[in-house]
Image (cartoon, rainbow, N blue to C red; front, side, top):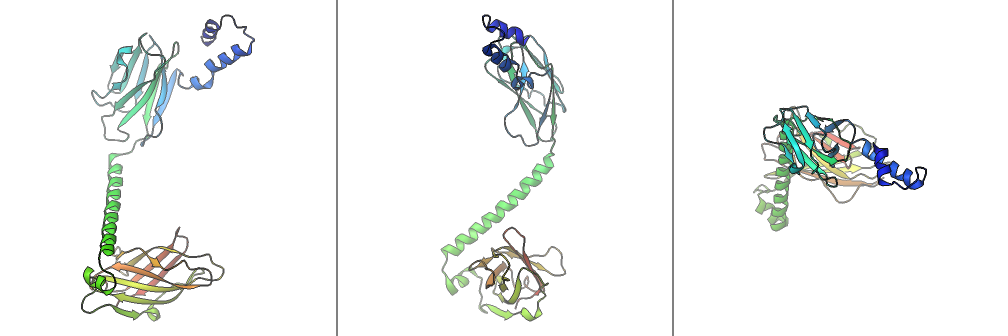
Amino acid sequence: MLLLSVLQRFPRVPASSPVFLLALALLAGPALAAPCSTVRHIEIPAVPAGDAQPVCISPGQTTVVSFDAQLAPGSVTLEGTDGFTMVDPGASTLKLVPSEKVPLDKPLRLTVRFADNAAPLSASIVLVAHAEEAASLVEVHRRQRSAESYKQELKAKEEEARQLREEVARLRADKSGPGGLRGLLASGAMGKDGVASKEISPTLTAPPTKSLWVVGVTAYRSASRVALEVELSNPEAAPTWTGEGATLTLEGKKGVTLKVLPVWQHAPIAPGENRFVVVEAEATVEEARGNFTLKMWEEGGTRTVTIGGVTFP
């Protein structure tokens, strides 16, 4: 059939000429082979990415699209319906018969919605009209993802957004308020008792590590905040260390953690240097009682520092 089309288009070109062979290669090449296969198998990912898959149709030839789930009633959307003599949706199938009016130079988008709650909720394919070839059967399968998984993902993103909003509000309040002791008083972080501090190095438990040594730790407590000033030593042969995050977990009570603010240090700790890292958390006097475990990690999380037995004054 393709050879006949070539001969009709190039009646005076010898079959052995390069022009004839090029035309034949273009018409019969692999670019059209996949969409014009008699039977097409299309898989729709849970999160659609990229363009819809093409499917060949041809005037007068029947193409049946079969889906692996029932379609929602009245959900079939087809561009250029005036170019079809039949568009017959079933429970999970769609029968198409194009007419001679179907455009050969304009792909037509077909979209359906599914009746269940599994993702993807819809599927789209692109119908490409061909003068003589068509797919007789198109089987469409979904990589299903439940709506519940989407809800969980949305819930996690909403929680992340809430935390970011709180952090932005805190930063704005810190920036707009006065600095120094006035700022501590204005924010309520310091009460009449001021800021209490104590050296807690002798009571700590820090497992030996090849990456960083804990030189000393001083704990601070105000009316609504606690802080730890940790002096770390980076060995000569170790790479530079920059703190990225930290946690303060109450020992003996699973899941009880303080809300830690971003870790602060004046500069990265170069090999052979000692520097201070400050970890601050929101906590009332009651919440700051007990023994805590401090865990700090660097960018990428490859080297961590864990200190147990942390107490606040």
